[in-house]
Image 1: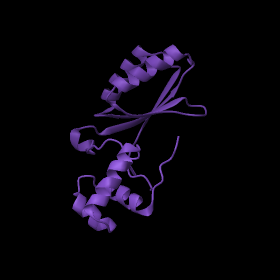
Image 2: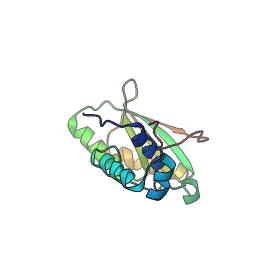
Image 3: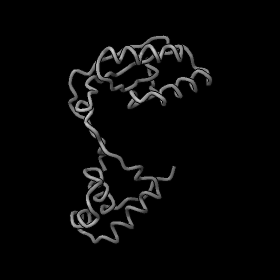
Length: 154
């Protein structure tokens, strides 16, 4: 994959957008020491290059009643494409799954799951194992979120 060339101004713009994408072009331009049109052109170019993806809003999970965050470690003895397709499809359909990663090492997958409580996690777990055969599942409840960010170090 060809990595786009980003100069210091591009990086300043990205930092501002990551902090608050709802700020006006005028505000961003002022903060990065440029004017509105060049900033807009750079943002448009970085969108076209795929550097900037979709824009969204970050919600507070606890204020929405999603107080339990589980990290789910999955080991599987299945490695056939059909199983993997079914597993990935199941994960993509579950709104509780915020992140899913395939890993190197002893654990095959790790999921980040947000639910209201342990009972809701058990409902998720039961639905998951009904959909796909899984060798071993370990759920770890996060007691405290120390750091969570979507801001990349650009």
